[in-house]
Image (cartoon, rainbow, N blue to C red):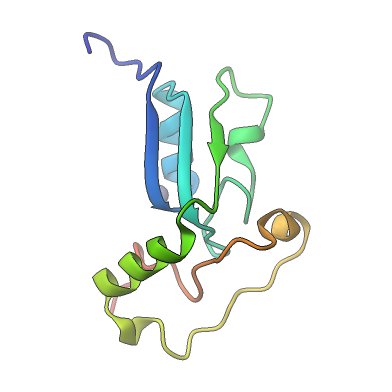
Length: 116
Ligand SMILES: [Zn+2]
């Protein structure tokens, strides 16, 4: 692409970006991110915080969540083994929680960060 900026790109992911990934999207000047399931434990777009909507940053990343959310959850479950998800509890939080209303969400710990 000839530049460190990813202007004009859209990133598609199964799970709502965490703070680190959301930060990378902002710094890389990505135009848009489309994600499947919300992540109430680490999600930094609509669940835990809303970094992509923070007007203090010098770049804004458009986003859309809940796209193929059920299919995304299925992929995540298959990849990280079903047993990790059993017995997990949904982390309850207020505030931004309502913005995820109706969007299927990952339950339990962030599968990308959990260690056995
Ligand atoms: Zn991340």
